[in-house]
Image (cartoon, rainbow, N blue to C red; front, side):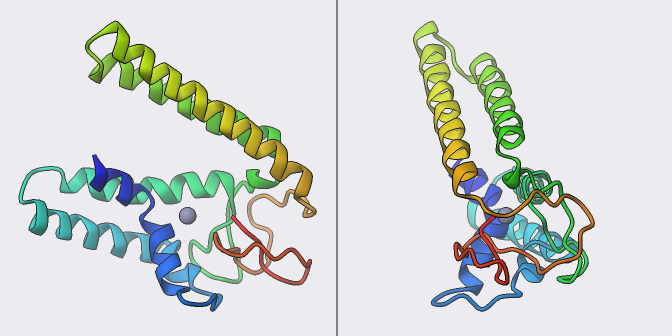
Length: 177
Ligand SMILES: [Zn+2]
């Protein structure tokens, strides 16, 4: 389970590593492009196979790739080029981001409770955790929506690729995603 969780954040972990100890910019092409994600997923699957020595490498690769799919819903990513990031950019449309992410949490909790939780008590625990995640998501989107000064700019708008780890807000700089 830990390996799947880490893999689902794989591209962000790569971007974090590439920007340590200081932000460099332009690293999204290695962490969040089609080629970067394909290479990362392959390496993660091979590493899992060598280290864990049990089935599940495909799930690890799938989790890594799904990260990019979801990033394309919430942000703008340099799929093919830093100059032309692509995505729905819902981080700048707070209510839509909350709707999409809360729906995912609810669906995941229902599936998890049905598949893995044997007793009513454990199912209640899953639903309680889901409710807490939904509350955090809604509050996070509410606060970020108030602080956000940038317009919603979905899809094929040409501008510098954003980073997950830059919070500076001047219009001429990159921003957090
Ligand atoms: Zn990401």
